Image: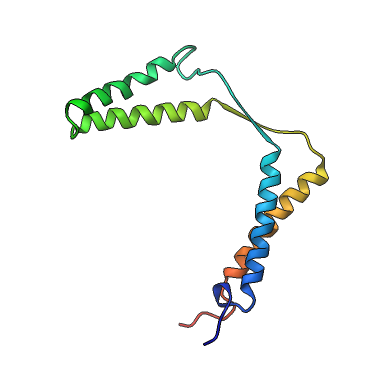
Length: 129
């Protein structure tokens, strides 16, 4: 019984896990430079967060009355989506100041690791047709 690496390539396991380690290190270092702040809820004007709760609360009320009501599910699901989308759109993401060298190291580790992983899972033999 012949043991083959990832994608049928010889030695693919070492390449894959080396690339995985590089990608994880690059991703970790890159994400450590990102700062996330929340902003004010201002979708439809200031102080409108309470209005986004209305469809959710009405939908939940309808579902308590009739758990199979499609209107209740649409209102509850739509209300939840509006709230999550509102939270995400009010986030402010900043990349902290860093040197060009450090940024290049992060990006090379991430891109190089992903490239090694892709090479490891690619089949080394031509396709049989």
